[in-house]
Length: 202
Length: 265
Image (cartoon, rainbow over all chains, first blue to last red; front, side, top):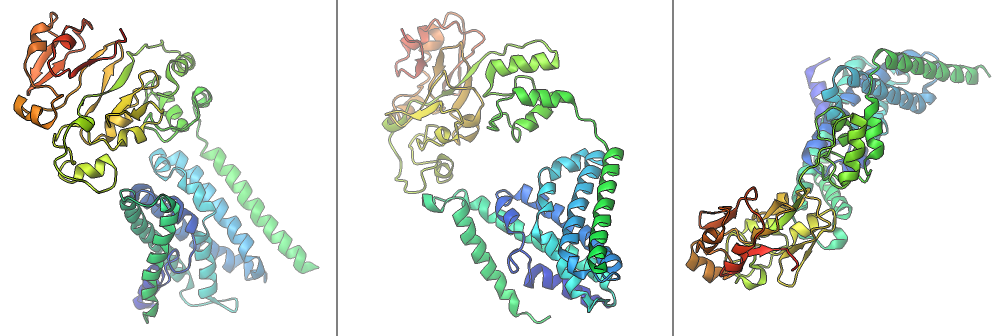
């Protein structure tokens, strides 16, 4: 378990394989919530939290339930089950313990339930850190790191997009491009820019 | 066969476990919500117009139930909704003086430009470039940002490129007041029918050169007012609505006709 491995994971997930801009996961919230910077960042923080926690729980489920009973083909459905119940649990817990945080998360917490970036992180973990149904050394901590990095990459993309969209609001655009169309164009340009990272050897 | 059974069993147990866990968590972390919130929400218009400043009707219902917002915070619902909410909360009905938005500029098309402006037709943006293209730095830019901001269809641009306010439709939500970069929209009590339609603190020669329809601070209205409701502040007449009796003497004497009234007769 050397530090370099973790740094490699973080850089590759945040920049090279950014979930939104390179893997095209979690696009609905990327388009839907990126109108203003503040909600976008709250959404990013909430997603980071959920991807991190979901990485831990799905790792445990995969390692101790699915692999021993030879049920890895149930990965998709069980992960969705885990993520959905986990987000619900967070919602209940946060509502009770910290109404302020609950308000800050607002509608974004339920939105994360169906965010494919979270599921993508869990699946990616189970593909990368298990080999032939065997646990690779350091698998758990690497899953954790990757889950966190996925969230950070998501937040980064949201922050960039919302900053651009806030300025787009002030521009005199042809009516046909206003709103979502120009957002798609910007998203594809940003995606092209992130493609520049693809050549990195790490 | 066992494979299928195992799969079904594993998923069922997993699902059941999570289900029970969630039900149990919901019981431990049960949050009592105020039944008033539901009731208030049911009488609010439900259009989520956002003019109250909250993120939609549910947020306002919660704020009213918690006492963070006044029972009359819903602008679009008006008095009818206010009455129902006070009924739910058990507080006395409060009759707030109705207000209307008022434009305090009379220049519009008649006020000459100081440069040509080819940018986006948006007052906020136009104002960023040398305070807009109008010669008078206090006056209306005329790109109708306020009209676009109005959620109640109470504003329209008139022939003179100035926003005209429909007094009956205006709910005094203050959206136009907030968006105007020149701060020339104000809320005035609806029972006051007189206002000074100028915001220029320039001296008389400048006002005459840049517009000709603004307040030149001649002081005739101050002298004409028998109720000392008008004061001259920074070369601009200001009406104190607490003292104004709508006698309209000031309207009659104003040489530039910049004191306006919406009396019909």
